[in-house]
Image (cartoon, rainbow, N blue to C red; front, side, top):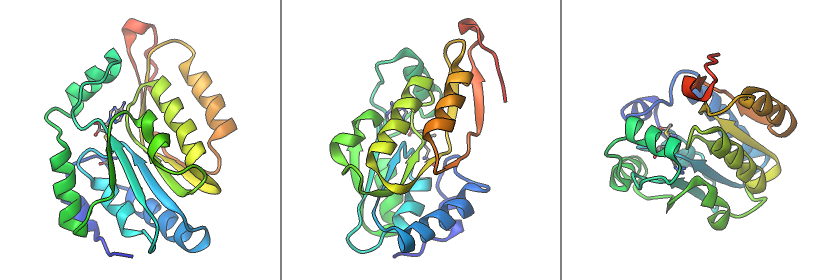
Length: 203
Ligand SMILES: C[S@@+](CC[C@H](N)C(=O)[O-])C[C@H]1O[C@@H](n2cnc3c(N)ncnc32)[C@H](O)[C@@H]1O
């Protein structure tokens, strides 16, 4: 395993911070010892959380990451969030940041997060970090992909923001979370609603 300092993580732009770092360190270290297996991340931005995942790889384990890296999304909401929040993101930015810390690269997939199951092995992962699109439907798909990838005792970690696009989303998400997310480190930073879709909940 490599060592990645909190200062190295802090130097990379992004939103992964506060409790995320110690919580992930604990989960990654414990699963490395107790479970073993691959790691995956859906949504990397410039690599802030990916460099931490990469530090906890045992010999023979693989980290697979997926991101659109600036490719235009097809869904309007996804297109809008990417244009607003990640303008000018490139794959080279991520690869440069990751390589500066680790001297190598993980398996990098440029595409939709939903494609992860085509590239990463099913039932082989000990931890999957879900942090890509914020649209309800996409987050649900990503959680399901994580379930496909995980070993029975693996961890699904969400540090995402869920954006409401229609009424009833919170109830449905809550039910799904209860039914399908355990065991997980579940930290939903916020819920945002679009008033034009009739939902303006904020939690
Ligand atoms: C919140 S950022 C990820 C932050 C990163 N995990 C970190 O901690 O620094 C979300 C990322 O997901 C990517 N993304 C957005 N929609 C996506 C989609 N449908 N499929 C794949 N990646 C997507 C964006 O390009 C962006 O890099």
